Length: 211
Image (tube, rainbow, N blue to C red):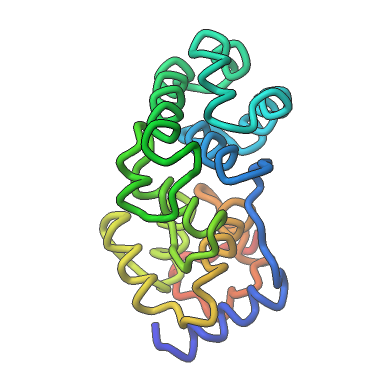
Protein backbone atom coordinates (compact mmCIF):
# COMPACT_ATOMS: atom_id res chain seq x y z
CA UNK A 1 0.00 0.00 0.00
CA UNK A 2 1.40 3.40 -0.93
CA UNK A 3 1.59 6.54 1.21
CA UNK A 4 -1.17 8.40 -0.68
CA UNK A 5 -3.63 5.58 -0.07
CA UNK A 6 -2.81 5.50 3.65
CA UNK A 7 -3.27 9.27 3.86
CA UNK A 8 -6.70 8.99 2.23
CA UNK A 9 -7.71 6.14 4.55
CA UNK A 10 -6.89 8.08 7.71
CA UNK A 11 -8.31 11.30 6.28
CA UNK A 12 -11.67 9.55 5.88
CA UNK A 13 -11.51 7.97 9.32
CA UNK A 14 -10.70 11.35 10.86
CA UNK A 15 -13.53 13.07 9.01
CA UNK A 16 -15.98 10.42 10.22
CA UNK A 17 -14.74 10.56 13.84
CA UNK A 18 -12.50 13.59 14.51
CA UNK A 19 -11.99 12.94 18.23
CA UNK A 20 -12.18 9.20 18.94
CA UNK A 21 -12.03 8.01 22.54
CA UNK A 22 -11.69 4.68 24.27
CA UNK A 23 -14.92 2.87 25.06
CA UNK A 24 -13.59 2.02 28.51
CA UNK A 25 -14.98 4.25 31.26
CA UNK A 26 -12.48 5.89 33.59
CA UNK A 27 -11.93 9.10 35.52
CA UNK A 28 -8.15 9.38 35.78
CA UNK A 29 -4.97 7.63 34.56
CA UNK A 30 -5.02 5.15 37.45
CA UNK A 31 -8.58 4.05 36.73
CA UNK A 32 -7.66 3.72 33.05
CA UNK A 33 -4.75 1.48 34.02
CA UNK A 34 -7.10 -0.73 36.04
CA UNK A 35 -9.70 -0.84 33.26
CA UNK A 36 -7.18 -1.74 30.55
CA UNK A 37 -5.69 -4.45 32.78
CA UNK A 38 -9.16 -5.90 33.26
CA UNK A 39 -9.96 -5.71 29.54
CA UNK A 40 -7.49 -8.43 28.53
CA UNK A 41 -9.58 -11.26 27.01
CA UNK A 42 -12.74 -9.40 28.06
CA UNK A 43 -15.10 -6.93 26.40
CA UNK A 44 -15.14 -3.22 27.17
CA UNK A 45 -18.85 -3.54 27.94
CA UNK A 46 -18.17 -6.22 30.54
CA UNK A 47 -15.34 -4.22 32.09
CA UNK A 48 -17.47 -1.07 32.29
CA UNK A 49 -20.23 -2.97 34.10
CA UNK A 50 -17.74 -4.22 36.68
CA UNK A 51 -15.93 -0.92 37.19
CA UNK A 52 -19.04 1.24 37.47
CA UNK A 53 -19.38 0.49 41.17
CA UNK A 54 -15.66 -0.11 41.75
CA UNK A 55 -14.60 3.31 40.49
CA UNK A 56 -17.10 5.07 42.73
CA UNK A 57 -15.15 3.63 45.66
CA UNK A 58 -11.62 3.43 44.24
CA UNK A 59 -9.95 6.37 42.51
CA UNK A 60 -6.32 5.91 43.62
CA UNK A 61 -3.87 3.05 44.18
CA UNK A 62 -3.97 3.86 47.89
CA UNK A 63 -7.73 3.27 47.92
CA UNK A 64 -7.23 0.02 45.98
CA UNK A 65 -4.74 -1.24 48.56
CA UNK A 66 -7.22 -0.39 51.30
CA UNK A 67 -9.89 -2.38 49.46
CA UNK A 68 -7.52 -5.35 49.18
CA UNK A 69 -7.40 -8.29 46.82
CA UNK A 70 -10.42 -10.06 48.28
CA UNK A 71 -12.45 -6.86 48.19
CA UNK A 72 -11.46 -6.19 44.58
CA UNK A 73 -12.51 -9.67 43.49
CA UNK A 74 -16.06 -9.01 44.63
CA UNK A 75 -16.33 -6.21 42.05
CA UNK A 76 -14.64 -7.96 39.13
CA UNK A 77 -15.71 -11.61 39.51
CA UNK A 78 -17.80 -11.38 36.31
CA UNK A 79 -14.62 -10.77 34.29
CA UNK A 80 -12.52 -13.60 32.92
CA UNK A 81 -9.26 -14.41 34.73
CA UNK A 82 -10.37 -12.15 37.57
CA UNK A 83 -8.27 -13.93 40.22
CA UNK A 84 -4.99 -13.27 38.43
CA UNK A 85 -6.05 -9.78 37.39
CA UNK A 86 -6.91 -8.88 40.99
CA UNK A 87 -3.51 -10.13 42.14
CA UNK A 88 -1.73 -8.04 39.49
CA UNK A 89 -3.77 -4.90 40.14
CA UNK A 90 -3.02 -5.01 43.86
CA UNK A 91 0.69 -5.62 43.19
CA UNK A 92 0.80 -2.82 40.61
CA UNK A 93 -0.99 -0.47 42.99
CA UNK A 94 1.59 -1.20 45.68
CA UNK A 95 4.42 -0.41 43.25
CA UNK A 96 2.75 2.83 42.20
CA UNK A 97 2.54 3.95 45.83
CA UNK A 98 6.05 2.83 46.78
CA UNK A 99 7.92 3.89 43.64
CA UNK A 100 5.86 6.61 41.98
CA UNK A 101 4.10 8.49 44.75
CA UNK A 102 0.76 7.00 43.80
CA UNK A 103 0.95 8.43 40.27
CA UNK A 104 0.83 6.49 36.99
CA UNK A 105 4.18 7.04 35.22
CA UNK A 106 4.27 8.37 31.67
CA UNK A 107 7.31 6.33 30.59
CA UNK A 108 7.00 2.97 28.86
CA UNK A 109 9.72 1.20 30.87
CA UNK A 110 8.15 2.19 34.18
CA UNK A 111 4.70 1.11 33.03
CA UNK A 112 5.87 -2.25 31.69
CA UNK A 113 7.60 -2.92 35.03
CA UNK A 114 4.17 -2.99 36.71
CA UNK A 115 2.61 -6.45 37.25
CA UNK A 116 0.02 -7.25 34.58
CA UNK A 117 1.14 -4.44 32.28
CA UNK A 118 2.56 -5.54 28.93
CA UNK A 119 3.50 -3.55 25.86
CA UNK A 120 -0.07 -3.23 24.60
CA UNK A 121 -1.45 -1.96 27.92
CA UNK A 122 1.45 0.47 28.28
CA UNK A 123 0.81 1.82 24.77
CA UNK A 124 -2.86 2.40 25.56
CA UNK A 125 -1.98 4.29 28.75
CA UNK A 126 0.67 6.41 27.03
CA UNK A 127 -1.70 7.28 24.19
CA UNK A 128 -5.00 7.74 26.00
CA UNK A 129 -3.88 9.16 29.35
CA UNK A 130 -0.80 11.11 28.27
CA UNK A 131 -1.41 11.93 24.61
CA UNK A 132 1.66 10.18 23.26
CA UNK A 133 1.50 9.00 19.61
CA UNK A 134 1.76 5.30 20.41
CA UNK A 135 -0.25 2.63 18.58
CA UNK A 136 -1.25 -0.37 20.67
CA UNK A 137 -1.94 -3.48 18.59
CA UNK A 138 -4.70 -5.79 19.77
CA UNK A 139 -6.50 -8.53 17.80
CA UNK A 140 -8.74 -5.99 16.03
CA UNK A 141 -5.89 -3.76 14.91
CA UNK A 142 -3.77 -6.76 13.91
CA UNK A 143 -6.61 -8.04 11.72
CA UNK A 144 -7.39 -4.66 10.14
CA UNK A 145 -3.74 -3.85 9.48
CA UNK A 146 -3.22 -7.15 7.67
CA UNK A 147 -6.53 -7.30 5.80
CA UNK A 148 -6.42 -3.79 4.45
CA UNK A 149 -2.72 -3.76 3.70
CA UNK A 150 -2.12 -0.70 5.87
CA UNK A 151 0.60 -2.47 7.88
CA UNK A 152 0.82 -6.23 7.25
CA UNK A 153 2.89 -8.28 9.66
CA UNK A 154 3.24 -11.78 11.10
CA UNK A 155 2.96 -10.71 14.75
CA UNK A 156 1.80 -7.74 16.81
CA UNK A 157 5.28 -6.27 17.22
CA UNK A 158 5.87 -6.32 13.46
CA UNK A 159 2.51 -4.70 12.82
CA UNK A 160 3.16 -2.05 15.49
CA UNK A 161 6.54 -1.16 13.98
CA UNK A 162 5.02 -0.85 10.51
CA UNK A 163 2.13 1.29 11.77
CA UNK A 164 4.54 3.64 13.51
CA UNK A 165 6.59 3.79 10.31
CA UNK A 166 3.79 4.11 7.75
CA UNK A 167 1.00 6.06 9.49
CA UNK A 168 1.58 9.76 8.73
CA UNK A 169 2.48 11.77 11.84
CA UNK A 170 -0.68 13.88 11.74
CA UNK A 171 -2.79 10.74 12.28
CA UNK A 172 -0.70 8.83 14.84
CA UNK A 173 -2.39 10.28 17.91
CA UNK A 174 -5.76 8.74 17.06
CA UNK A 175 -4.77 5.86 14.74
CA UNK A 176 -5.15 3.28 17.51
CA UNK A 177 -8.75 4.25 18.21
CA UNK A 178 -9.77 4.57 14.55
CA UNK A 179 -8.41 1.14 13.70
CA UNK A 180 -9.80 -0.61 16.77
CA UNK A 181 -13.28 0.79 16.12
CA UNK A 182 -13.06 -0.22 12.46
CA UNK A 183 -12.13 -3.75 13.50
CA UNK A 184 -14.70 -3.96 16.26
CA UNK A 185 -17.73 -2.83 14.27
CA UNK A 186 -16.99 -3.12 10.53
CA UNK A 187 -13.93 -5.20 9.69
CA UNK A 188 -15.11 -7.96 12.02
CA UNK A 189 -13.41 -11.34 12.21
CA UNK A 190 -15.75 -13.83 10.57
CA UNK A 191 -17.59 -11.83 7.95
CA UNK A 192 -16.33 -8.28 7.41
CA UNK A 193 -18.99 -5.73 6.54
CA UNK A 194 -17.17 -4.51 3.45
CA UNK A 195 -20.30 -3.07 1.81
CA UNK A 196 -20.71 -0.56 4.63
CA UNK A 197 -17.01 0.20 5.11
CA UNK A 198 -15.76 3.75 4.77
CA UNK A 199 -12.53 2.64 3.12
CA UNK A 200 -13.72 -0.32 1.03
CA UNK A 201 -12.38 1.11 -2.25
CA UNK A 202 -8.95 1.68 -0.69
CA UNK A 203 -8.69 -1.65 1.12
CA UNK A 204 -6.51 -4.34 -0.45
CA UNK A 205 -8.39 -7.31 1.03
CA UNK A 206 -8.98 -9.89 -1.71
CA UNK A 207 -12.11 -11.52 -0.32
CA UNK A 208 -14.48 -8.61 0.16
CA UNK A 209 -18.11 -9.22 1.09
CA UNK A 210 -21.28 -7.28 0.40
CA UNK A 211 -22.32 -7.17 4.05
